[in-house]
Image (cartoon, rainbow, N blue to C red; front, top):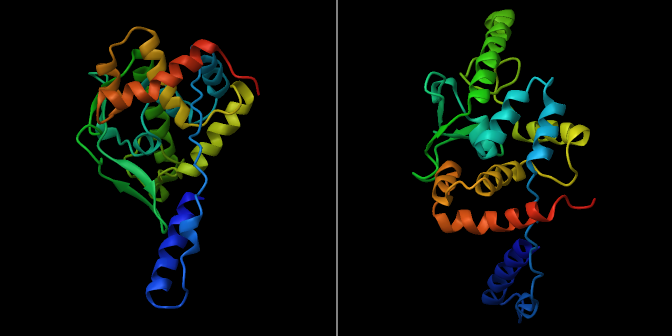
Length: 235
């Protein structure tokens, strides 16, 4: 709504300058404030229940990876195997997968803070090794039809995952084994919140999330920590 008001006001300003109207009536109207979506982080128990419900799904490694890293959705779906060092147990964020009006496209990180290397838990590394073997089987079975982009998380044909379809899959699994009213982006906040509640230094959390400043990290996770301490919200 604020966006529509701004466009209408600019259009009427131009109409006043051209003498088409005598007054910009949009200036007399205050647009409604846009409500900021409430952050709903998963507790450790809720995250474990969700992962248990998703364990048999082909994309389980992606959800496990997200819970352990807190990557942005585009960063997660833009990961390539060249970004993952299974021996050292690290992943480096180098790009994001975004949807334009025409197609899916890869985009460079917007800032140097977004370009970062994150250590991976042993459980995630083990899951990635298994996932890589299964992906090799999919590549072999499809032969020349396999469209290999080198992506860690992709379709069975090797193509990039549509972010919207990925979120729909998440929401479907969430209805089976997770709390209601949780968005995929809340997984990112869940990761940060759990780290802070476990006593991790905020600077470390900032670097893992790729925030521009530590203030951004503390501001965005303070509400999450309070919500987590209050316990699950009633649906």
